[in-house]
Image (cartoon, rainbow, N blue to C red; front, side, top):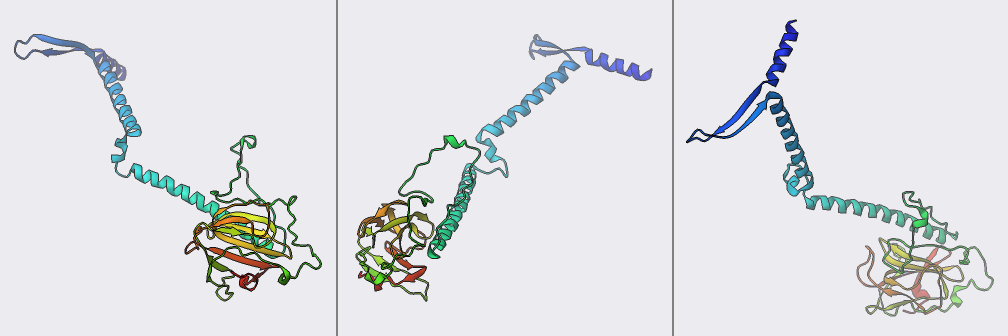
Length: 287
């Protein structure tokens, strides 16, 4: 019984009406008045508090004021975080590209036919909406060996055509040799310096088996020739041929450059391989 009476008294108190009056201090005349109840006061106070909290959250979420909160990153820091995430993603792709490149070169040197890399399809994008463009340069990694269109002649023996001493090599770049062939230092090539924007020429007739970008050696191009010969041209500024192109001896295939992390200046890094063995180009070419 006592609890019911207390509830009734509490409800009556909440329903009791009060008047809020504002007087003129000089004349004591009523300027403004308002009837209130405790329920109305609690309702208005609660609604006002909710609107205050909501406006504070919106201001912090959608205005630059949030940057003044301790621990919240500034616009420069957020931009740096995004850029670092992009760089990490690009680095992972570059590492994958490098690994694929080494696997193909290893297969070529061992006299095997390179296999197509297994690409993981992005299921978030419909395959019928993809549009792929092929470029001569400015791509992270561009290689596609067309086994149906290329005859690399790696496994085939051609009688009377395996003596490379009888071949006439065209000079890939007329210039000065700055670093010679030296197996002891693992420099299985010659570095040739020429005039700016000099053209790089094919040393023999052949087929482009690789043309693309690597982190260490920049834009590179590999040619497959007869007699199981492979020539490599590295650090180019621009590539003029694509995978699958047939070239003639002396035909321009690239422009001398300074691309890649392992370069020390504009030059041509030229390699010559025969059945997986690196040859000294100076023994066959008069630079």
